[in-house]
Length: 101
Image 1 (tube, rainbow, N blue to C red):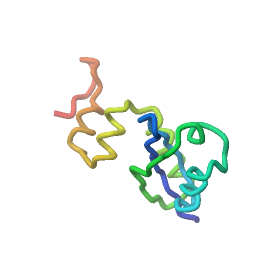
Image 2 (cartoon, rainbow, N blue to C red):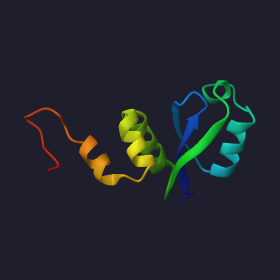
Image 3 (spheres, rainbow, N blue to C red):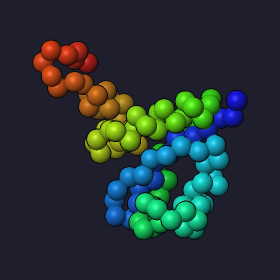
Image 4 (cartoon, one colour):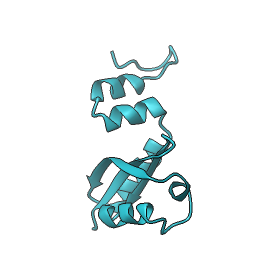
C-alpha cells in the first residue's frame, strides 16, 4: 500500500483548500506553479498550513472528504492543533444527541 497525505492550503483570499495526494511535496509545487487550472490557481499565493500522513490513499481520501464538510472554525482548530476546541466543535447541537462534556 502507498502512503498518502491529507493537506490544507490557505489561499491568498483567506479560504482553505483541502485535498489528498501520494506526493505532498510535488503536489504543493504544482499548486504554486498553476499546473492545474482550478480553485487554487486563482487564489495564489497558497500556504501549506496542515498535513497528515495516512497508511493508504483510501484512508487519506476518506479523511479529506470529512474535513471538506467541516466548518471554518473546526478546520482552524485542526490546523492550530487545538484538539480540545476541535472536540467541542464536533458536538452535536441537537439536545437529543450526545454531548462531549
